[in-house]
Image (cartoon, rainbow, N blue to C red):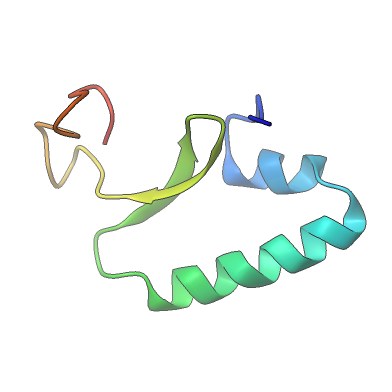
Length: 67
């Protein structure tokens, strides 16, 4: 099910406490190991990790509006 949250914090805040704890732990590991320049955000109703338009202005190859 897709979330209507507009930020990772809002997404995590909307989760039940037991799921929030687990997903937050996974997010921390991802962020600790994410390459330089990547960002965490919301895409397609879920948490995403992507190269932002600031680093790659043309965006995603099938939808230039998406980073």
